[in-house]
Length: 358
Image 1 (cartoon, helix red, strand yellow):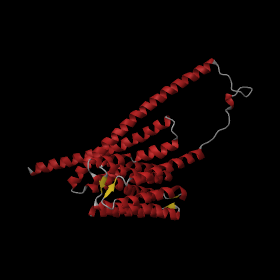
Image 2 (tube, one colour):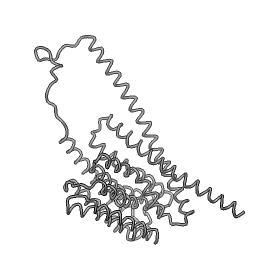
Image 3 (tube, one colour):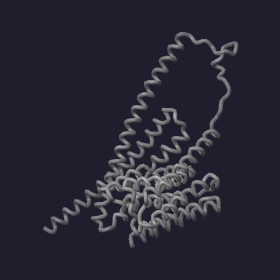
Image 4 (cartoon, one colour):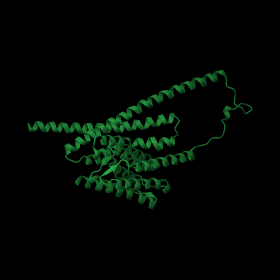
């Protein structure tokens, strides 16, 4: 009888792990489809590229964390909600950014990162102070939402400036389109018919592309929601089977899992040696995690999001520490170095050790 129970328990654990991993796959693939399709829909609708990059892509990469934490808050799993959001920030800096710096150290423009760095430090300090009473108040968290809106507005303004600076303005006229007198050449009936046919074909193709993007947008959203539901449900079960608090599962498996889009972006950036994309994506994701996700969770949870002692006095102080390690040395030396990456990674190992032991 004992052996049968042991086999049944092992089977349940294996099934739980499998379904948890299914949730991760769904949420990652769904996030990929969501960002790609939303970007294409916005682009085909005439939305400028810089706005797409500053809003759709930035928010899209943090959508797994947003949906997962929101579902957890709605189901009363505050430990997973807060652990996922703050744990994702710690994973983004302590693991993903550290790896990026170890493989791709670089100098940087102080002006480009100073505002984003200060915003990131400010947001986590404000969050910590707000949570000292043991909960996050939905009304007070509006301050974080204001910080989020200011951050997004700055992203759009900077994006517009960059787009204007990089745009190639062609004021010349194509000689092939001019007649002998310098006036537009007359087109024959055949040319006009050909042009009309091409225009109709292009219109049909655009309609097909929009329809395809809408389908993938819906599928992506459904995958993210379904995957997030799996993460919360089976993450909680996994914590029970392992005999550890839900917070531990949240700051490790769930947080790292929902941060995989940032990890993929970082690995791609390392391969292509595009360091600005990697660091910029991480900073943006962190500000959104703190300033958008947690206020939303506080509202969903009935106006108060309970904060566990360890979340308040371990996760958040480490989060402040990671943020300072990521920003201050770089601002002072005007570069991101391998030494900085090594120190951040070592601190993350220490954080994981302290979290599991305590």
